[in-house]
Image (cartoon, rainbow, N blue to C red; front, side, top):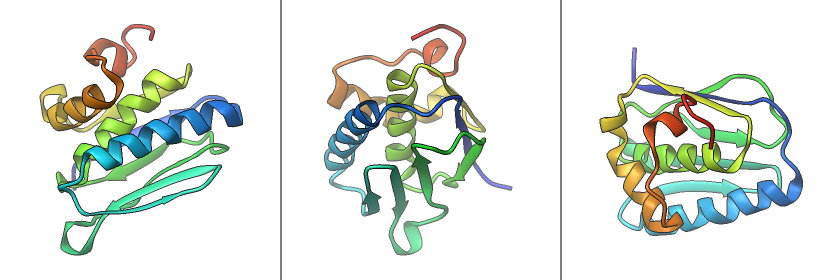
Length: 133
């Protein structure tokens, strides 16, 4: 099996909104200086994975992809960046849906990265869609 995160955008965000998202995602990536990452960013997608033995599946958010997606990180170190970026996506995009095999407690490293960049404390109810952003 494995530890995975599941997500979907219900509508295509504007280019300006997606650019804002990727800008903050880059800040999160830079804040995770102690995690070796393979990152690719374009105007329409963000792709993150670990490096070497610390890699697993690519985490990809494509601006125009409205299908359900998932990323199996298997608790590897880059999971902290993936969960931080997923929290960011939930706070940025009005109709971003998210679930995970992990409990909120297992997202603590991602919560910390998100908080250090965005100066917000993410709320479990907001991130997992039990409350509106």
